[in-house]
Length: 182
Image (cartoon, rainbow, N blue to C red):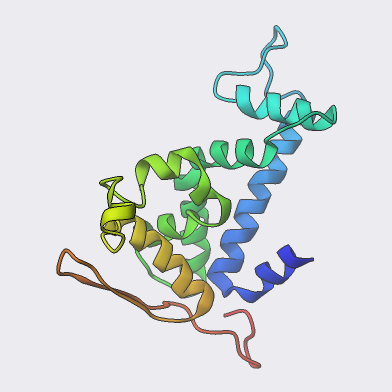
């Protein structure tokens, strides 16, 4: 129920992003259950090994990491998810950059994946986490605050030690009684 509330609370682009994300979960499960992730010899297809193992363990009641396996696999589809999101947005009068939609797709548990953490580590210099905690990687900050601004309909301002003040403002319109999902 909490997941449904989270989906309903975000604006149209966020709602659409979530629908695309959840649809990809459904497609992966369908492909597994239909045997579409296995080669002719019964082994998992290249790139799907961790996902197949996690799902097999899940179905067998064994310890599994199916959520992490799903999300790590989904990082390969950021471009496709962003394409779907930008197409939907354009059809509804939004004209943000494709890069903006890519950043929106890095949300939820995708930011906890090894791929995200490798591409966008919170700290470029790992010791900054303790020695200089305000020196957050600007690329990491950008993705996190773009998503937060859209979700919370709030502007986030971050004066970074590099001398730049990063401002992230929502681009969509907040829900209202006339158009609750805009």
